[in-house]
Length: 504
Image (cartoon, rainbow, N blue to C red; front, side, top):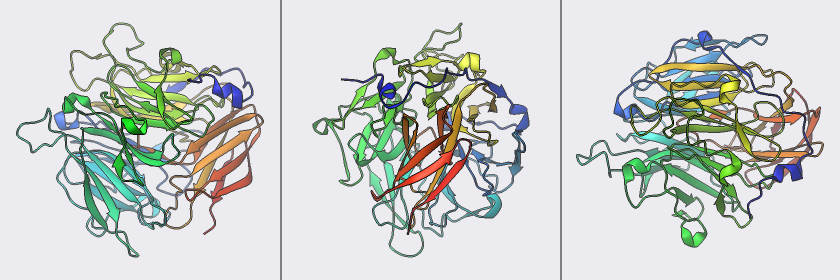
């Protein structure tokens, strides 16, 4: 049985929900577009992370045939501002980039996905980066990379990297029916990261990957695929990381086929099992985690299917790309943003296709607020990120568009609740504690989030975890570390960021 109102069971009634409002401050950015031909119909990711170690999240955005751009956050006293940093060697052909600390020095590096050989950039002081692709023996494969995620095997000093590829550009029979394989990059033993490649197949034209604890409580690799190209025989995939095999119907995972673009993950029911949001053309599919370790498709009236544009004038189906959960009005109920936009000129899909901002209510159902919140842009959006760029406790929004300027929105919601942030640092090489689960309790309200790298569409936010706590003034925090050990007894006050370090 699907529970639609579980948050009511684990949380006291919150304050009256503040209506979210965002101010378009794109004029504070340099103009940047994701450009290119059919090889850049997909991609266009943006990642948010602090590369200058000043507590303010910075931005790296893919450019396609335009150069990738790095923006350093120089916000001051509530005014969001960015400076362009020339540290990425005018790199082109980029579909997206993911921040990940590969060498265990507590500084985030960048895995850069490209149409062609990928690159790895080692993070340094003040948003400086050095190309270490050859030094770290990252295999240089001339494939079309469109997905990435990472995890740490038990006791590993360095992460395992999973890389997803789209269609095989070299196949003369393509593009339809010529989906490429996946690549698993495994670290070798030693004091420096060096990698060997393993091919994982079959591939079904992957556009998103997420390594995370699944509904069984087991780390698995979820792979979202675009059935537009695999035509027949394909489906979404779930690969058990420990058993190193794909799961199927006998494991309780029936085949699901959709135009998979992006993955978002968040526990919405308070049972420490993450629900999944899978973006697609037409219906956006939410799956509810069950106590037996399986998933059930959410009922239609939950409000997340978002299959048509909410603006009048174009009734054709929507195309969803990046999805992300975040509490934009700090009422202790995670909301959902979905970037929307036509692949290019697909006549059967909406051309005037605004981004979604779905606000969760106390009954667990979601209501569209994109137009009233001021984010109903109808450009061909791709990657996006919700992050607190100015440190005021409210999540702001960055969106990359195909052949249209990147957008920046400042959260200006009046009457929002309070919020806390939690930054965790792990032991050993897994310095950013990937695989940890952070739980908070504020009065009768309880929430949790899993720490992951991956998912989304071609980019992700790696930053302190943001929790809205409504009218509460402090929260108690517990961490379950990747090795299964637990730390508790922490208190964080509203408006503050709590940093927790696992003992070595």
